[in-house]
Length: 441
Ligand code: ADP
Image (cartoon, rainbow, N blue to C red; front, top):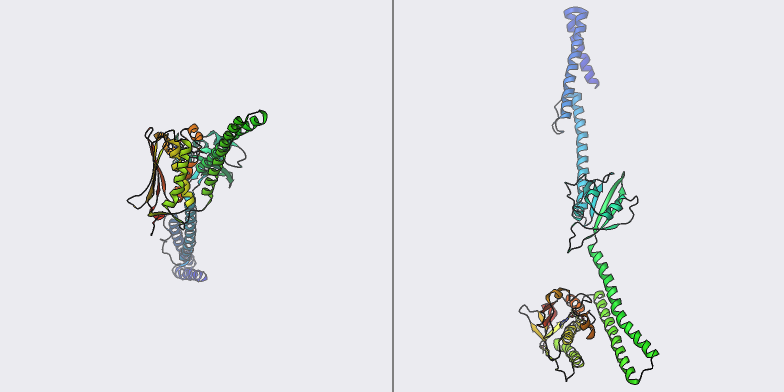
């Protein structure tokens, strides 16, 4: 800095001496002023170049100037480079943050103080039917046209969540959304959405299940307490007493059956998947299934009535790997159903066979009433019955096929049902090859 000042003074002195030589004191003054003027002009030109650079050019393309101005440009360039790097890093962080919110399974909408949409992720757009670009700066209540949401939005206090119908809901498919508002920043709001359809369905199923169980237990209980009251109040003879006690036994048996099936279901749901350690032959499995079915058939249809024809075929060469108790209950449910729903004189064929892809199948085919197509997909729902009174009369609980399906899923297998009204039914259990083994005799 000082050296530049000395250079300027030197040139002023030189031009003053030259001016003095030409025209004494006036020449010296003009010479010194001329040098000052030229120096100012040069500075003006350099300042103009820097101003133009700052206005139009990129940081990487500075004007080439020496001296003090060159230093100034260099420092400016460094400050600007630092700022650019900082802005880039902030932008990158913002992008990462927005990508994280985009990846969230929950919907996020940022609202300005007037309730207009500033930004929303794709999940929120899908939940609420927004177009994440076109609907920006639209008022949220104009787009979410749900009275529950509108009431919630207009409240002062947004504690808790509200459940509204999702935009993709249709007549056949219900979509439930949990929506919650949180205040942030200066009067801004964060709108969070969560798909709670599965939770709502599970809740509805639980309520239905409790209602069904209560109903199923209440009916025999009412009958039982009626009989007890009759026995206590009326003076019955021995025959009447015996008849009443038999009816009471039937109702108690019904309740027992129901409680047993409920216990089996809860055990299936609460226990770990069956191990691969238990192996049992089909013959061992089927022997109690067969004697139970024959006993059931005899109690249902007396020999005098045309008896049912029951056929059992289980190849001695094959074994299954899994829970014997569970597979027993799956197989006996199908065989007992076939016996219970097939009229006197009908036939039930229970056959094990191997499929070409090494899987083992157990099919139970009957000549019973058959089931019309619209019922087939719902048969494995708990307490679903085609003929309610028929099921109850024959001691059904409405849980047998639900248990069977569950057992098959736990063993990696499947339950198939083929039936036509008036043409009998065929229930098939298919076990994966991994759950079968050949007996070494
Ligand atoms: P349930 O204890 O009532 O028999 P299940 O779950 O075992 O309950 O069966 C559900 C329903 O499927 C039964 O109520 C019955 O209407 C129908 N069903 C099951 N097996 C047969 C069959 N072999 N023939 C005709 N209908 C059947």
